[in-house]
Amino acid sequence: MQINHFDDLKDAGLAQGEPQRLLIVLLRAEPAAGGNAVTRKGITKGRGTLTPVMATDLELTPELTFTAIVEEADSVGEPWQMMLVSSLAGGQGRSPTSEEASGPLQRMADAVATGGDISQYAAFDRAGSPVRLQAEA
Image (cartoon, rainbow, N blue to C red; front, side, top):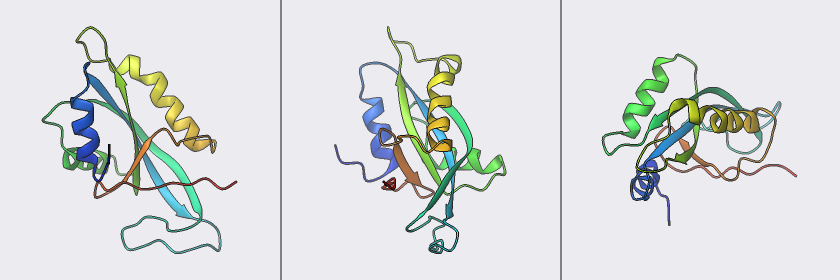
């Protein structure tokens, strides 16, 4: 499946057999010391670091919009440039609870904070476009 926008990920999640809960970690992207400048969209181009600034989970529903997620994220007040997204499947027709999502959500944030593997997560910019992240060897 080709993901060209956050909405493609949302549609894929809604098509799953069980209800899904979105796991979202907001990231601040900063250029490396003496590195490349930040582009006009606020995304670091080239070398830099990612820092988690907020983590949240939301029930995936047809009514959930990317715009609503951005507005809620911006209300927190911490500047962010990207979001890392995953989902957690429910069972027996029931969406996972926030409590059930807390462990996987914390592992996502920890992976970013410690430079761990984040390749299994989808990353999006503030416009909902996918971002390709590559770790340095």
